[in-house]
Amino acid sequence: MTDPFFVSAHERGVVRVFTTDFDAEGNAAITRENVARLLGSGLDLDPARIEVFPSSRLDPMTLSEYLREGYGIPAADLAGKASALDALKGLVILVASSAFRGKSAELDPKNGIRLVGAFSEPGMQPPKPMLPAEGPEVTLQQRGATALPSGGRKPGSTLALAALILAAVIILALVL
Image (cartoon, rainbow, N blue to C red; front, side, top):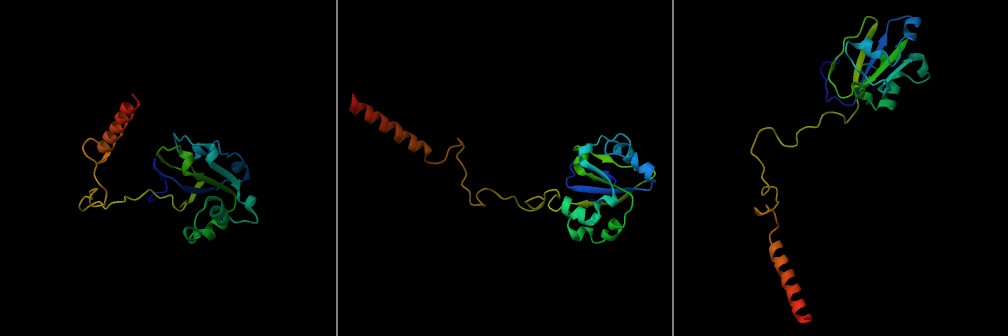
């Protein structure tokens, strides 16, 4: 993820951490339902995928511990920001990628809302191509697979079908 203010339509497993510079009264007006208005214009966020809480609510747990345990963010990814996260006072806003409902978005936090960081869950990176981008094509024969005849049947299936029909004809002839 290169720009934490841009959300790709294909983004998965990223949690963005915001905080506020408002006083307690201003913070009280922020709910998960109105976070979209504060993060940019025209955003349609799923409030169920947003958390809004005072940092003191985590006591005795720290915010970095909460992100590790609750969101599965690796400690190594938090290492450079853990002290800053744990020192946050006031309101914390956590917005998961799934809150964007699979739509791309550009974030433009309003005055008083500050992005602290964006963190990725392990294993949530886009899949990498299995084959190299350049180089010779690998055919089925090179992989050890046998190609099917143009009819789509395995070799010998016609012979097996003919033997089955012959057996049925012989049994009928004996019975009659």
